[in-house]
Length: 357
Ligand SMILES: *Cc1c(COP(=O)(O)O)cnc(C)c1O
Image (cartoon, rainbow, N blue to C red):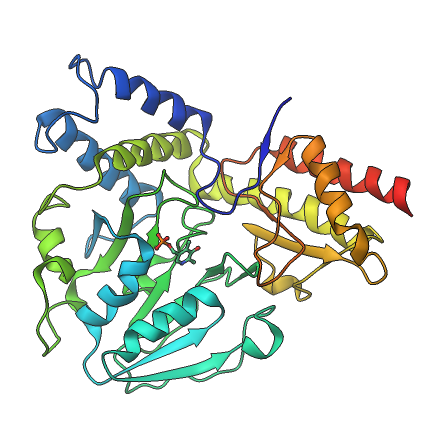
C-alpha cells in the first residue's frame, strides 16, 4: 500500500533527492567511489558545497552582504551559537513554544534575557502580538514555525534591532525578505535534507562585536572564512540538500512552493473546520502553520482518537500522531509532501465521520 508520510522530522524528502543520493552512495560524480568515502576536499565534493551555497542564495534571493554556511550540531547547537556570536549585554526573545524555550535557556547562560511575550498561557496555540522589542537588546530571537504546536509567523516582521530566526521547519516554504534578518538558521531535517546538517545565513557586518571568549567552532567567522570546510562537514546530508535545492528550483522556487503549500494546508484546515469529529488546536487563521497542522477530536468524541489513528494507519497514513505535549494529531505538510497525500487524509476524515457519527 502507498504510504503517506506526515512525520514532523526527520520527514518526507523529494523522491528526486532520495534517488540521486542513493545513486551517489554507490557511485559519486563518476568517481567510482561512494559519496561516503571521498575526501570532503576532493574537487567533486567542493563542487557540491559550492553549488549548494549558490543555490541557497539564488532561491532565497540572499543579498551579497550575507554568508551561507553548513555546519553540524543541529538547530539545538545554534541556540548557543547565536548568543556566542551576538550577546553582549542583553537579548530579547519571543517565547512561542518548546524550541523557543530551549533557545532562551541557552541565551540565559550569557546574561539577561528579556522574554518580550509568551503564548505559554494557552499551551502555545497562538502567536503573541502587540509586544514591544527593547531597543537596547543586542538582538531579538523568534521561532518562525513552531513545529510542535502548529503555529507560524508567516511574514517578515519589522524589528529595530538585529533579528534572529529559527526557521528549521519552514525554510524554503515561502519567499523571505532576507534583508530583515541578521541571522536565519535551522536543522535541515524538516524541509531540506536528512538529519546531520544545519544551515546558517548570516549578515556579515553583525559579527566580530562580542567582548567575551569565542571558541573556534562556535565562531561563525571560522566557518564563513573556510566556506563550510573548516572541519569535516556532514558530507552526505549536504549532498542530499543540494538535490533538494535543485528539485526546488525545478518546481519553480519558493514562490511556486508557497502556492502549493497554501493549497495543501487550505484543503486540510477546511476539512478540520467542517468535520464534526475534529477541531484545530490553533484557532486564529493568521497563526496557523502551513507546515504542521495540529488537530484533536471534538468534545464528546475524545474516545475515538485511537480509532481514527488506526483507521488512518490502515489507509497508509504514517506519522500523524500529535506531539505528546499537544495530543491528537499532527499532519506535517512540508514541501515534498504531494497534494495527493493531503487528499487521502481528508478523504479518510470524511469517511471516518460518516461511519462514526
Ligand atoms: C526540530 C527543530 C529544532 C531542533 O533541531 P535539531 O536539529 O534536532 O537540533 C529546533 N527548532 C525547530 C523550530 C525545530 O522544528
